[in-house]
Length: 537
Ligand code: HEM
Image (tube, rainbow, N blue to C red; front, side):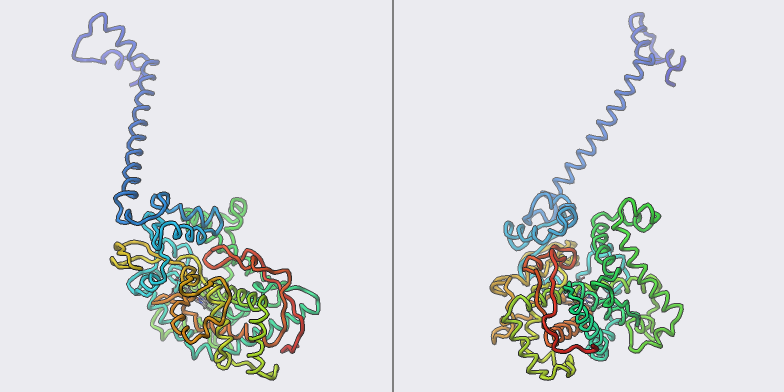
């Protein structure tokens, strides 16, 4: 009706305006004035909406700060208001969340509110309360980002996870791992041969990359009966390993900004390459593993022809009673390869640095291994390595200081429960990084010192309860037996059969930032001093 004569004629239809009012009314409904009024109305509307938003915000802020069930727990107000508090340390400060957690616990005590609905604990007693409770599911917000919701790792449904674990369990049993020991040994042998070759060429070795290629070879052989031949790559830098590391960064990004997921997976590759090239790593990672699964599904005889049993024998076993979709097979592959590669390499990296950096540890370990295997040519069976007390203590101490997974793994308190002595309301997201158990000075005096002897004292039997690198409870690491086996065989063989020395490496090189696992700030570099003997040379 704007500007319509009818509209001008009957603004006040029932009362006849006096002469004085008429021009005023005309003015009021003429275009410029009406425009002004419209602007006015719009401003009013904006003010109204703005006011409503501010009111809602005010209510939200007050609810989170003063009336939320977690309001009584101490912590920074910013964390009580938004989960982006953690995002800031995880993403913008690049893996600084654990350091910030340390500061928060120093300031606020053993329990800190780290998100609107999240608590983090630092008292070791809380670890069992959280992770051993079979009623506490994994938190979907955290685990969905791994694009492995139907896998053993990513499944947040308690019953679903139990079923998947029971399907996988036979493969990870002690008996299975012993049966597969020759695969690990053969991989370590190839690695030692390649190190000898590097020595001839005068190359310094990046220990972490070397160990990553061993663990990748082992897990892909176990999964798909296929080697990636990562050990044969120059500098042990198989492209898959670079993709793998980048994809971890991409996952963290998607975790904090879930709206990015359809962008990464939906947009054409050329566009993502321009906008966020690093995020392409994850699709590339899953594609590489997807290709392995497609190959098995197209040619099932690949598994039959395999020299040893593989994980996919179990997953595709019709007798299991579980029919896995292609997506589920893919998710499990993502999980197994990621979980089996980085963890072992990280702990091994810490172990080799500490051994080579500490002459006394190196001397005692070598002596024990020499006594057990006087002939350097003789095989070093896992069962015999496991009986060596000092080697065992070195592995334990490496697990303690290498941690395994450092980012706090969140669980949902399915019921109100006392955790670390604090009554936590039902529905709260609770977590505790293993770092707070492994570096607790009351349990491990001088916690940052690499001291294998702490595991050998008569009083140390209770210490095992506080070695939680593989976590605890119903979602404890399913590959724990395999992880231990790899560490015994890698460390035992490397220390007994070659004489390594560090090159330009200091303890700052094993400082880390948290990106699920520790991400080393530097590199542990070493070269062979003397070859006592090398298998396959
Ligand atoms: C030293 C080596 C290893 C360490 C320190 C380690 C540590 C861990 C930790 C802390 C978890 C619990 C994660 C969570 O709470 O969500 C876990 C889970 C898992 N790990 Fe390991 N791991 C190691 C080796 C392996 C290996 C070799 C495999 C073999 C594929 C493996 C497969 C898994 C799987 C499938 C899960 C998920 C289990 C579940 O949620 O039910 N891990 N690991």
